[in-house]
Length: 269
Image 1: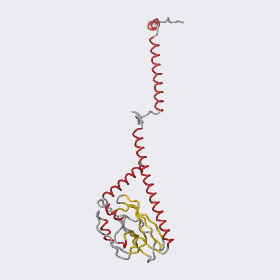
Image 2: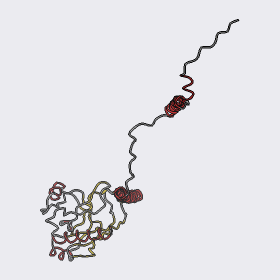
Image 3: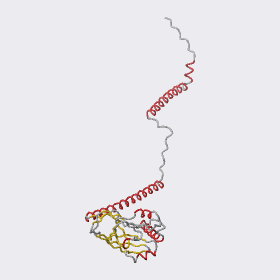
Protein backbone atom coordinates (compact mmCIF):
# COMPACT_ATOMS: atom_id res chain seq x y z
CA UNK A 1 0.00 0.00 0.00
CA UNK A 2 2.83 2.37 0.82
CA UNK A 3 4.46 1.80 -2.55
CA UNK A 4 1.18 2.47 -4.34
CA UNK A 5 0.85 5.80 -2.54
CA UNK A 6 4.42 6.77 -3.42
CA UNK A 7 3.88 5.93 -7.09
CA UNK A 8 0.60 7.85 -7.14
CA UNK A 9 2.31 10.87 -5.56
CA UNK A 10 5.10 10.76 -8.15
CA UNK A 11 2.57 10.58 -10.99
CA UNK A 12 0.61 13.53 -9.62
CA UNK A 13 3.80 15.55 -9.20
CA UNK A 14 4.83 14.84 -12.79
CA UNK A 15 1.40 15.82 -14.09
CA UNK A 16 1.47 19.10 -12.16
CA UNK A 17 4.94 19.94 -13.44
CA UNK A 18 3.96 19.15 -17.00
CA UNK A 19 0.79 21.21 -16.80
CA UNK A 20 2.16 24.42 -15.23
CA UNK A 21 5.80 24.15 -14.14
CA UNK A 22 6.58 27.88 -14.12
CA UNK A 23 3.55 29.03 -12.16
CA UNK A 24 4.24 26.69 -9.24
CA UNK A 25 7.75 27.98 -8.51
CA UNK A 26 10.83 25.83 -7.94
CA UNK A 27 11.60 25.66 -11.66
CA UNK A 28 15.28 24.74 -11.35
CA UNK A 29 16.99 21.35 -11.41
CA UNK A 30 20.50 20.38 -10.30
CA UNK A 31 22.95 18.17 -12.15
CA UNK A 32 23.70 16.31 -8.91
CA UNK A 33 27.49 16.67 -8.66
CA UNK A 34 27.71 19.75 -6.45
CA UNK A 35 31.14 20.03 -4.80
CA UNK A 36 32.51 16.82 -6.34
CA UNK A 37 36.07 16.58 -7.71
CA UNK A 38 37.02 15.46 -11.23
CA UNK A 39 40.50 14.56 -12.42
CA UNK A 40 42.12 15.94 -15.58
CA UNK A 41 41.81 13.37 -18.39
CA UNK A 42 39.02 11.48 -16.59
CA UNK A 43 35.95 10.35 -18.57
CA UNK A 44 32.66 10.45 -16.70
CA UNK A 45 29.05 9.52 -17.53
CA UNK A 46 26.16 11.33 -15.83
CA UNK A 47 22.37 11.12 -15.97
CA UNK A 48 20.09 14.02 -15.06
CA UNK A 49 16.43 13.16 -14.58
CA UNK A 50 13.38 15.38 -15.03
CA UNK A 51 14.80 18.04 -17.33
CA UNK A 52 11.69 20.03 -18.26
CA UNK A 53 10.85 22.96 -20.46
CA UNK A 54 8.25 25.71 -19.83
CA UNK A 55 5.88 24.45 -22.51
CA UNK A 56 5.49 21.89 -25.28
CA UNK A 57 6.67 24.32 -27.95
CA UNK A 58 10.09 24.76 -26.35
CA UNK A 59 10.25 21.04 -25.62
CA UNK A 60 9.75 20.20 -29.31
CA UNK A 61 12.31 22.83 -30.30
CA UNK A 62 14.87 21.38 -27.85
CA UNK A 63 14.78 18.04 -29.66
CA UNK A 64 16.49 19.63 -32.65
CA UNK A 65 19.06 21.65 -30.68
CA UNK A 66 22.46 20.10 -29.79
CA UNK A 67 23.46 20.51 -26.16
CA UNK A 68 26.85 20.12 -24.54
CA UNK A 69 28.61 20.01 -21.16
CA UNK A 70 30.84 22.96 -20.27
CA UNK A 71 33.23 23.96 -17.53
CA UNK A 72 32.59 27.63 -16.76
CA UNK A 73 35.07 29.78 -14.87
CA UNK A 74 32.45 32.23 -13.54
CA UNK A 75 28.86 33.44 -14.09
CA UNK A 76 26.41 35.94 -12.62
CA UNK A 77 25.44 34.18 -9.38
CA UNK A 78 23.25 37.06 -8.16
CA UNK A 79 21.11 36.81 -11.29
CA UNK A 80 20.62 33.10 -10.57
CA UNK A 81 19.63 33.83 -6.94
CA UNK A 82 17.04 36.37 -8.10
CA UNK A 83 15.65 33.94 -10.66
CA UNK A 84 15.36 31.11 -8.11
CA UNK A 85 13.18 33.34 -5.89
CA UNK A 86 10.53 33.81 -8.60
CA UNK A 87 8.05 31.39 -10.18
CA UNK A 88 8.61 32.94 -13.64
CA UNK A 89 12.36 33.61 -13.95
CA UNK A 90 13.70 36.17 -16.37
CA UNK A 91 16.82 35.43 -18.44
CA UNK A 92 19.48 34.84 -15.80
CA UNK A 93 22.34 32.90 -17.45
CA UNK A 94 25.38 34.94 -18.42
CA UNK A 95 28.91 33.47 -18.23
CA UNK A 96 31.44 36.01 -17.01
CA UNK A 97 34.55 33.93 -17.66
CA UNK A 98 35.97 31.39 -20.07
CA UNK A 99 33.96 28.29 -20.94
CA UNK A 100 35.46 24.89 -21.85
CA UNK A 101 33.43 22.36 -23.77
CA UNK A 102 34.03 18.93 -22.22
CA UNK A 103 31.25 16.64 -23.48
CA UNK A 104 27.98 15.94 -25.28
CA UNK A 105 24.41 15.76 -23.99
CA UNK A 106 21.63 13.56 -25.40
CA UNK A 107 17.95 13.91 -24.44
CA UNK A 108 15.97 10.67 -24.07
CA UNK A 109 12.89 9.35 -22.34
CA UNK A 110 10.61 12.18 -23.43
CA UNK A 111 7.29 12.52 -21.60
CA UNK A 112 5.39 15.63 -22.71
CA UNK A 113 7.75 18.52 -21.87
CA UNK A 114 10.01 16.42 -19.58
CA UNK A 115 13.12 14.51 -20.67
CA UNK A 116 16.19 12.76 -19.28
CA UNK A 117 19.68 14.04 -20.08
CA UNK A 118 22.65 11.71 -20.57
CA UNK A 119 26.07 13.34 -20.34
CA UNK A 120 29.35 11.91 -21.66
CA UNK A 121 32.32 14.15 -20.76
CA UNK A 122 36.09 14.09 -20.47
CA UNK A 123 37.90 16.64 -18.32
CA UNK A 124 40.41 18.55 -20.49
CA UNK A 125 43.79 20.02 -19.60
CA UNK A 126 42.68 23.06 -17.64
CA UNK A 127 44.06 24.85 -14.61
CA UNK A 128 43.11 22.89 -11.46
CA UNK A 129 40.65 24.75 -9.29
CA UNK A 130 36.96 25.57 -8.90
CA UNK A 131 34.58 25.65 -11.87
CA UNK A 132 30.87 25.42 -12.63
CA UNK A 133 29.61 22.42 -14.63
CA UNK A 134 26.81 23.56 -16.94
CA UNK A 135 24.62 21.94 -19.60
CA UNK A 136 23.74 24.38 -22.41
CA UNK A 137 23.68 24.90 -26.17
CA UNK A 138 26.67 25.64 -28.40
CA UNK A 139 28.79 28.38 -26.88
CA UNK A 140 26.83 27.97 -23.61
CA UNK A 141 24.51 30.89 -24.39
CA UNK A 142 21.20 29.20 -23.37
CA UNK A 143 20.78 26.72 -20.47
CA UNK A 144 19.31 23.27 -21.06
CA UNK A 145 15.73 23.50 -19.81
CA UNK A 146 15.63 24.10 -16.06
CA UNK A 147 19.26 23.10 -15.42
CA UNK A 148 21.38 25.34 -13.18
CA UNK A 149 25.21 25.16 -12.88
CA UNK A 150 26.87 22.84 -10.36
CA UNK A 151 30.06 23.87 -8.54
CA UNK A 152 32.84 21.30 -9.09
CA UNK A 153 36.58 21.00 -8.51
CA UNK A 154 39.16 19.98 -11.07
CA UNK A 155 42.29 18.20 -9.83
CA UNK A 156 45.29 16.51 -11.38
CA UNK A 157 44.91 13.38 -9.22
CA UNK A 158 42.34 11.22 -11.01
CA UNK A 159 42.45 8.41 -8.44
CA UNK A 160 41.88 10.80 -5.54
CA UNK A 161 38.94 12.36 -7.37
CA UNK A 162 37.35 8.98 -8.09
CA UNK A 163 37.84 7.84 -4.49
CA UNK A 164 36.27 11.02 -3.15
CA UNK A 165 33.21 10.58 -5.39
CA UNK A 166 32.80 6.96 -4.29
CA UNK A 167 32.91 8.04 -0.66
CA UNK A 168 30.27 10.67 -1.42
CA UNK A 169 28.00 8.03 -2.99
CA UNK A 170 28.46 5.71 0.00
CA UNK A 171 27.69 8.58 2.34
CA UNK A 172 24.55 9.46 0.38
CA UNK A 173 23.37 5.83 0.47
CA UNK A 174 24.00 5.64 4.21
CA UNK A 175 22.04 8.84 4.74
CA UNK A 176 19.16 7.47 2.69
CA UNK A 177 19.16 4.17 4.57
CA UNK A 178 19.36 5.96 7.92
CA UNK A 179 16.43 8.19 6.98
CA UNK A 180 14.45 5.11 5.92
CA UNK A 181 15.26 3.31 9.18
CA UNK A 182 14.15 6.35 11.18
CA UNK A 183 10.93 6.49 9.18
CA UNK A 184 10.28 2.77 9.80
CA UNK A 185 11.00 3.20 13.51
CA UNK A 186 8.54 6.09 13.74
CA UNK A 187 5.88 3.99 12.01
CA UNK A 188 6.59 0.99 14.27
CA UNK A 189 6.39 3.19 17.37
CA UNK A 190 3.09 4.62 16.18
CA UNK A 191 1.69 1.13 15.50
CA UNK A 192 2.80 -0.03 18.95
CA UNK A 193 1.19 2.95 20.67
CA UNK A 194 -2.04 2.40 18.73
CA UNK A 195 -2.08 -1.31 19.61
CA UNK A 196 -1.44 -0.53 23.28
CA UNK A 197 -4.27 2.01 23.33
CA UNK A 198 -6.66 -0.46 21.69
CA UNK A 199 -5.70 -3.21 24.12
CA UNK A 200 -6.25 -0.93 27.12
CA UNK A 201 -9.68 0.15 25.86
CA UNK A 202 -10.90 -3.40 25.17
CA UNK A 203 -9.47 -5.32 28.17
CA UNK A 204 -11.93 -6.00 31.09
CA UNK A 205 -11.46 -3.91 34.16
CA UNK A 206 -10.40 -5.74 37.34
CA UNK A 207 -12.71 -4.77 40.24
CA UNK A 208 -10.91 -2.85 42.88
CA UNK A 209 -10.83 -4.26 46.41
CA UNK A 210 -13.18 -2.47 48.82
CA UNK A 211 -11.36 -1.62 52.03
CA UNK A 212 -12.85 -2.84 55.36
CA UNK A 213 -14.75 -0.31 57.41
CA UNK A 214 -12.72 -1.22 60.51
CA UNK A 215 -9.11 -2.19 60.84
CA UNK A 216 -8.36 -5.84 61.69
CA UNK A 217 -8.31 -6.72 65.40
CA UNK A 218 -5.05 -8.27 66.65
CA UNK A 219 -5.13 -11.78 68.17
CA UNK A 220 -4.20 -10.70 71.74
CA UNK A 221 -7.47 -8.79 71.93
CA UNK A 222 -9.40 -11.90 70.83
CA UNK A 223 -7.64 -13.93 73.57
CA UNK A 224 -8.50 -11.37 76.22
CA UNK A 225 -12.14 -11.30 75.20
CA UNK A 226 -12.24 -15.10 75.21
CA UNK A 227 -10.91 -15.48 78.74
CA UNK A 228 -13.12 -12.66 80.00
CA UNK A 229 -16.12 -14.45 78.52
CA UNK A 230 -15.09 -17.73 80.17
CA UNK A 231 -14.68 -16.06 83.58
CA UNK A 232 -18.03 -14.29 83.26
CA UNK A 233 -19.76 -17.55 82.33
CA UNK A 234 -18.17 -19.35 85.30
CA UNK A 235 -19.25 -16.64 87.74
CA UNK A 236 -22.76 -16.58 86.35
CA UNK A 237 -22.92 -20.38 86.60
CA UNK A 238 -21.87 -20.31 90.24
CA UNK A 239 -24.52 -17.73 91.11
CA UNK A 240 -27.25 -19.64 89.31
CA UNK A 241 -26.21 -22.87 90.96
CA UNK A 242 -26.37 -21.30 94.41
CA UNK A 243 -29.81 -19.91 93.76
CA UNK A 244 -30.96 -23.25 92.44
CA UNK A 245 -29.85 -24.95 95.68
CA UNK A 246 -31.67 -22.41 97.84
CA UNK A 247 -34.87 -22.67 95.84
CA UNK A 248 -34.97 -26.48 95.89
CA UNK A 249 -34.72 -26.86 99.74
CA UNK A 250 -37.71 -29.08 100.90
CA UNK A 251 -40.50 -27.47 102.84
CA UNK A 252 -40.18 -30.01 105.63
CA UNK A 253 -36.63 -29.08 106.06
CA UNK A 254 -37.53 -25.41 106.19
CA UNK A 255 -40.17 -26.19 108.86
CA UNK A 256 -37.62 -27.97 110.87
CA UNK A 257 -35.32 -25.10 110.59
CA UNK A 258 -37.93 -22.52 111.44
CA UNK A 259 -39.64 -24.47 114.38
CA UNK A 260 -38.71 -23.25 117.88
CA UNK A 261 -36.40 -25.47 119.76
CA UNK A 262 -37.48 -26.95 123.12
CA UNK A 263 -35.16 -26.24 125.96
CA UNK A 264 -32.97 -29.04 126.87
CA UNK A 265 -33.41 -30.49 130.37
CA UNK A 266 -30.76 -29.45 132.77
CA UNK A 267 -28.56 -32.08 134.15
CA UNK A 268 -28.02 -32.12 137.83
CA UNK A 269 -25.35 -33.95 139.40
